[in-house]
Amino acid sequence: MKILVAEYAVGAGIDEYMLEGRAMLGTLIRSFAACGHEVLYPSAGTIIDSGKAVETGRFEETLASLSKKCDAGLVIAPDELLGDLTEIIEENTTNLGCPSDSVRLCADKLESTRKLATENIPVPRTIGKGEYDDDFVIKPRFGCASEGIHRSKKGILKDGFIATEFIDGEHLSASIITGKTQLLLTVNRQLINIGDKISYEGGMVPYLSDREEEIADIAKKTTKILGCRGYAGVDIVLADKPYVVDINPRPTTSLIGITRVMKAQIADLILKSAFGELPQNVEVDGFFTFNKNELIGL
Image (tube, rainbow, N blue to C red; front, side, top):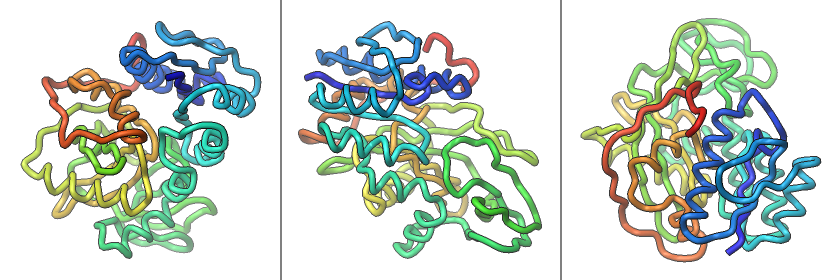
């Protein structure tokens, strides 16, 4: 098959997210190539050691042009842009990622949290406007980066921000692939720096927990409720319950570690989620820890 893998930072030349974007893109391209597929990817100058780079003019136009030439496509981008970019893929070829309507719901942290709450998924108490007076995490309503996220005890929300109750617990993520069935890849530990500002620094894959079944159950229910397909990551704070704090409807940085400890090819699993049958489980051997600022060469 001819596969399009498009990553926004590499394709549009966005230096701020280049390290993570390049590492995720390279991981996926090498896996699809290892499975025997021809891989094309848009690039504003970055070259991966596998696949074929296609020089980008305007990212959206290149995405539209390439997707018409490929049998399937997968796009990775900031969540606030991902819905429209996914729609381009859907119009032209088989989308290997989450549907555009699911992406838009997941990107709206207020609406997705409300929907999960109505389905009895544990989520932090969340305020969408007005005053807050307690221990809260303030973050943009839309967007996937950790910039702008901070902890605050009292204040008035600015437009475009929400307040979610701060929950003291272990910061984890669950990587799930959804097709006809659902497959847990790994539970991961997130390395989070918590001070006045809160930032994501990296991760450890996998993270062994005697509550893995409980975590996996909540993560699978979450992705199903929100209509996710293919690969998605569910961020969880594990306290008295596994509280869902964010949903990433796309490949996440944890993928970099997963592919180094999982014996199956991630590309094969993504394709099976769209075209075939997923296995009941995957074999994982070893551990991999990474810092997001040290991803050069990965």
